[in-house]
Image: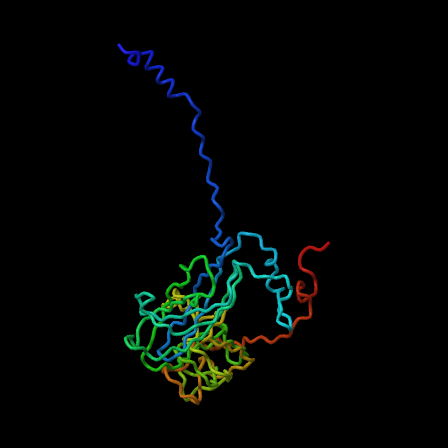
Length: 376
């Protein structure tokens, strides 16, 4: 029997194979931070927006643009740490302070292209309808601005009416070097194009008075909101009246309690950008009633004191737009007396109007002048 076949030989061979240094343990990776190949961070623009819900070819369209710079410098740039509001330009055109330099992650002024795309189609199927000048955006910052575009006449191959989407393309001329261009196109924003000529449509959407308890002879100071729900602006002055009537109609038996004038007209919905979620019938209710942030197509009238008629004992009070038909407005309601409220004397009670004067007491104290609460 050969020696290499013996038990002792096999053990010796196994021992020889185990002889030698152990394999070194692999260290964890030491990758660099997210620098570019140039050695510093770059800007990264992202864009979203809101569009007016309706317009027409050859008409105007207003859009709100939100431009974000997601880039941020990952290296120390001492000369770029000066707050932007402290940076100015002197009479000779030099930057002040003189040591200031922009960060490599800042985005210079650029352009935003606006495309109109048939709904359900890609950006390549759209037509460019305008360009917006965008301001510079510092690193990790945001800029919001509004622009109004004039659409061209209907191009060949595009429907005269129907649903389209508005798409915004940031940094369209590519004059800003970015780390990524994949987020430079906004989500689609719905807009409805109409074929018929756009006209203003005025409605009273808010008439702030007590819901109950109005009596003949009361003194009121109404707040009224008038909205233009049409796709065209009203460019002339328009009168708005508070009217009393013996029936919930505007007729020969009606009388004007107070008259107000809206100067300069009212913009249409083509100048009122809205989020997509607020374009449906249910979603627009919060846009029409007692809004805090007033839209471009809504005007608020803060009425002065006016006395209601003292007779008859029961009548109706409402808002009438253009009561004397000076403008002959289209699309007005047949009744024309809007947001009607009841004025009535109950059981022969006198007027419930309250007349008072401003208090001279300090805010924390009641009218008797004594402090409220425990005093020490």
